[in-house]
Length: 462
Ligand SMILES: [Zn+2]
Ligand SMILES: [Zn+2]
Ligand SMILES: [Zn+2]
Ligand SMILES: [Zn+2]
Image 1 (cartoon, helix red, strand yellow):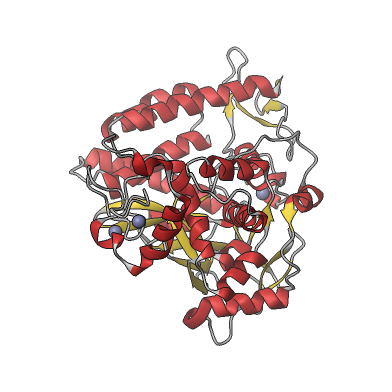
Image 2: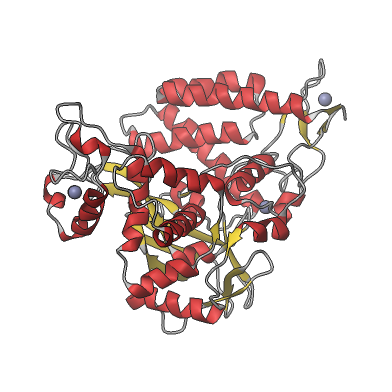
């Protein structure tokens, strides 16, 4: 499943949200009308453009513009496919040791480009046409690390992060127009990202205003729109940072009516998760579908600068899934406690059994405790220990409906079916099947339809 590109600036208080706040953050899109944008998208889709698309781009009540159904679309139906306009490394921890061109794992030594651009690239890609322009670009800027003779070579995540933006400068004219037409949050954090990257070079053109303005906008477009798309090569998985303009135009809904997934990090496939009526807005999610109300909205606020107003966000039981529920702190009561108010980041919490009310600060601490305890186990336990922990220990401090516990169960499912494939006992397989049924039941309650998570769990997509 793809993750939205996180880059959290400081959050402001709750309530000052939605369209006004969103508008204030949007850098202008160079006056592109929906029609012009549609033309640029058509050119970008190329041979993947359908004769009679079941979608169109138009202005949206949710935010700016969006993608809409031109006719009734049935659940499961293909809406569109698109190739990445540009991809690059996420440059996150644990994602530094792959070739920036072919994404194969690099050897322990001698993994930096032999032409001394200081980028991690394999022997054969170093001389490829694909790498040539960016290699020259980086060398022109004179990376500091290039003369660290004899020192241990290492990848610099700051200069690696700017690579995707550099690649945008080498796109064709029409493709550049499309990038210009995309929306961008003008966050101060993005400027810091550029300044930090500039410090990695001796000859970064910081005094070239035109270039710096363009770079700032491109970094904004990437941070606002890029997806993290898994790419599998030679038995290992890398996360790529990819710009998929049409997929990015779709607006957010917490239980969206369309699902998207990526094939080899470079192709986005979007299908209807539910039936979508003609004229209906086609939506996707920028968060994880199983996160609770509060967690989703804190994430949206920090990374996308808006508060969601969808039906799910207005229901404190979340269609009866109780994904945010915690145990009551009252002696002798083991009832479920859920937020009273919706659409605020600091709600009161009330027990549905004894009706006691607890302040948000207290429950937030409790939620953090559950999150940290469970995440520590996920990072350190074998599958067997994880199953024991989920079944025997978690029920003591965390309701089975809480999303953190659900994520732990998902972790067991992924490890048993994808990553730690080994022999498991029939009993262990039984537990996994039970977790799977549980997650599918929650997705059903949420009305998620044929969502990406369901397809992943049932093995319909890899
Ligand atoms: Zn390579
Ligand atoms: Zn190079
Ligand atoms: Zn929502
Ligand atoms: Zn209670």
